[in-house]
Image (cartoon, rainbow, N blue to C red):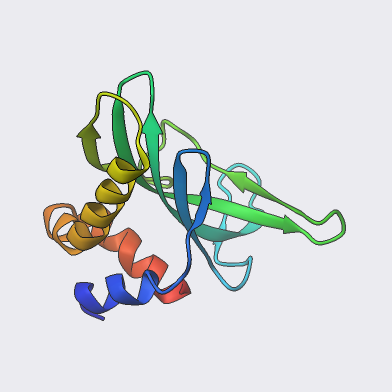
Length: 140
């Protein structure tokens, strides 16, 4: 699947919006996609695209990451696994930043529009982003 098709397919999912943050999450349909290194337990793969306002640094930031997940069907919640220092198994890539003096909904919407329109270009610039987009599109 080419990058343009992958981007349009993955963005058919509606985002989750909450306090100064917009997030898309794509999960593998089964939880036996990969195995954890330290336990050998079978887990699912989850791709996240997060757009948020960082008040401390006065900027909007867009991050795409891969984590593992395990749904606990008996308890009704999901657990995610990741390692901030393992960029091979858990890539987390900052794909865009936009400086702002302070938060506004208009600026947040502008940043979201720019990131989504330029996602295919980010894929051309980074092989890791392209892999994450292809994976997310396969789960969409």
